[in-house]
Amino acid sequence: MPEVLKAPLVVEFPFTRSLGPVQSAFLTGLREQVVLGVRTADGRTLVPPVEYDPVTAEEIRDLVEVAPTGTVTTWAWNHEPRRGQPLGTPFAWVLVQLDGADTGLLHALDAPGPDAVRTGMRVRVRWARERSGAITDIACFEPYDGAPGELTGHDGRFEDMVTGIVAPARLDYVYSPGRAQAAYIASLSERRTVGERCPSCHKVYVPPKGACPTCGVATSEQVEVGPRGTVTTYCIVNIKAKNLDIEVPYVYAHIALDGAGLALHGRIGGIPYDEVRMGLRVEPVWTEGGRYPDHYRPTGEPDADYETYKEML
Image: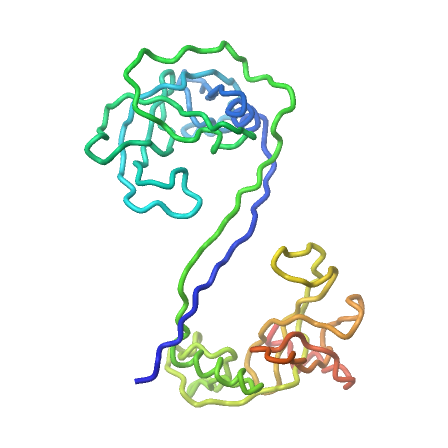
């Protein structure tokens, strides 16, 4: 039986967002060891604060301080912490209703084991040693048997307000391509591009999926396409990616390889970025030892007529 192909893959990008006045005050408060909520028109205090009442949709900006102590309302034990989680040892995820708040704040509880955690237990904030204005300024919660924490009397106005955050998003997974894409990968190692034809609509899918997404029938007939193709549409990239050693600006395009029923994407090189255009005829450029084309370059042929590729836009 042939070995099943698989490989670890990571999808990661930093998500940058600006903050409104409520979130700005909340995160700046954490930096200063102050927990702020927001009070609704009917007197509820929401922590973490939001800018619109989830019940009435009214805008709310009445900031109010709550205590750094509270009560666990529900919890779940985390036996195996993952990369980037608050603690490196097993801990409990808890919803904590801080004293003075009417809603729960989700965070980690540092406890020796699940037997030490219970609904109704009292906890307090453990502040991070270095704080920058992020939810991680709360390092975690810890068990606490004392009186409710004292308030500082802060009104939510700070100097040097936090106005934006960068939230990294990351997905780690193991990918197995299956029969159709394994054959596609094998063909690329021979500097060929092979798709599969649908027996019903006769489209050739590249990369192949093993089934036609339109007709829902299995595909098995292999068809070699390309190597040349046509730029159907494109974009100019002006922001440099951290993991790509490519100077900006550069062009990424959808390329309909000759004989294919839909376009795949690839980088366009060998031509100034502002001369790339729809209908440009291109061919692959391989690097020594490369597992797929490094980029596509112009062939010098006349541009393709729009009618020949309009269905693949």
